[in-house]
Amino acid sequence: MTTSRRYGTVLTDHTFTVPLDHDRPDDQQIQVYAREVRAAGKAGRDLPWLLFLGGGPGAAAPRPLGGEGWLHRALQDYRVLLLDQRGTGRSTPVDRRFLAQVGDPDAQAHYLSHFRADAIVRDAEIIRRTLIGDRPWSVLGQSFGGLCTVTYLSFAPQGLAEAFITGGLPGVRATADDVYRALYPRVVAKNAEHFDRFPGDGEQARTVARYLRDHQVVLPSGRPLTVGTFQSLGNLLGGSDGSRRLHYLLEDPFTGGTEPSDAFLSEVDWELSRIAGGPLYSLLHEATYAQGEGATHWSAQRIRGEFPAFDATAALDSGAPVLFTGEMIYPWMFDTDPALRPFRQAAHLIAERTTWPALYDTGRLRANTVPVAAAIYYDDMYLDRDLSISTAQTIHGLRPWITNEYQHNGLRTSNGAVLDHLIALIRETP
Image (cartoon, rainbow, N blue to C red; front, side, top):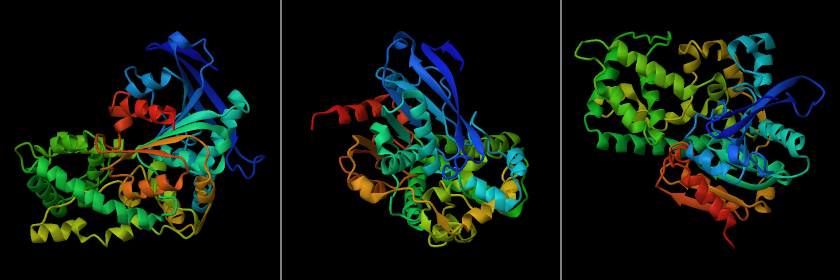
């Protein structure tokens, strides 16, 4: 265990050994890393613990750089544990080198099936008992971390003193098809907002898409920049600054020439890499919505066919806008992206997996006794507000805060205001 002081905080490293498969605790073990953060002025006090479950799937916990408003607010009342969820950050990795050692694609797909919210919650319970025994702790879940928090409330509520959720709630009874049918119209609306805000971007997008249709373009990473890859930049549109960043990408993609500039290609490559992060994000994205019987069968790709507005070829032929897509993973990404290509066969097996463990227990949620507050962003592009509201009504005692003041990344961008509001909701006298 290593401790250091930085940015007015005391940071302590923790590493825990947990089973890969919690139902077979004596078999293969993996390591899970977490960073404890305490305010330097309160390091000697026995403050309650707040577990932070971040977004993803497949994203490491944020690294404190100083100035994080939400963390500063949390440290006023808690000692915070930033968890690198299994397979991410400094936990036992899931990357192409490690997965190649696991075995054939069937073995890889089986291995990857143990990296969803149900396993993350069971990891958290081992960590809690190791650190504080039988005492419950608080949890803050952002985005995918919020989905994990609802799983926590479903299967291990005895471990929770209170729960804060930001960035929406999962549809506890929704299939992957239900999720994408709800989200594609949200993405259409985000496109309309963007083109209204930046009227010239519509024609710029058409010009780039037309060029990519007629030419082979390769990004610095070796990934082909196809029309579909270009459209996937729309994942930016769900963040508070994403529309502006997309606009600046489109300002001058050809820099006065007839081919996309090196600067444009480098910026596109960086944005695409930043959006996706590690391979778990792409491999398990649809599986985060799967429980019980039934495969996802590449749901985002299938349901996209119900929304012809995203057909770029038809749009170019008809003069309609070329729409950007959102947080959707498509099978062709495992053919075109060099970072994902080694996982292609495993990805298809995961998409066809027919049985998944339950992620939510609606009966337990209806009988919930843990204090819960949740921020539901009215214009959220990643977690549909109607599904979120339905789940908020399912979880007994949950106090929802429905707001259009922030986008999906409101926890990070609000300088602590979102977390402060949720804490106040739980502490209010009923």
